[in-house]
Image (cartoon, rainbow, N blue to C red; front, side):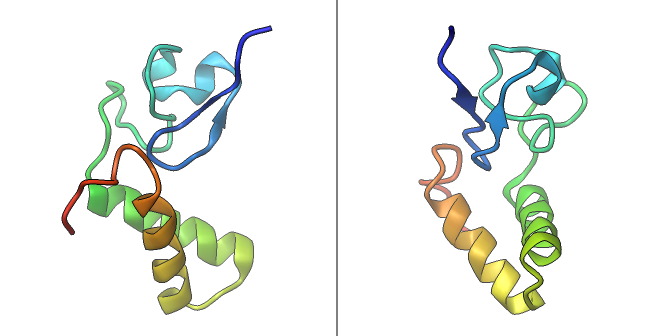
Length: 84
């Protein structure tokens, strides 16, 4: 069995081809963090998506969701060295 892969942008487990950006299992980013061609979206786009996800899933305020998303993304390989 192959090793499970996780999106290097958001940490989502990628188990099936459709989970990977552009359906390419060699893509280190998930379908949610990529555009239709498989290219990583901008930091701002991914942050907004992660913030909305945190709000929806955790039932927290906009400010709390923003902080949660920023802290989570700061740990991910795609964003570790990004200056906001």
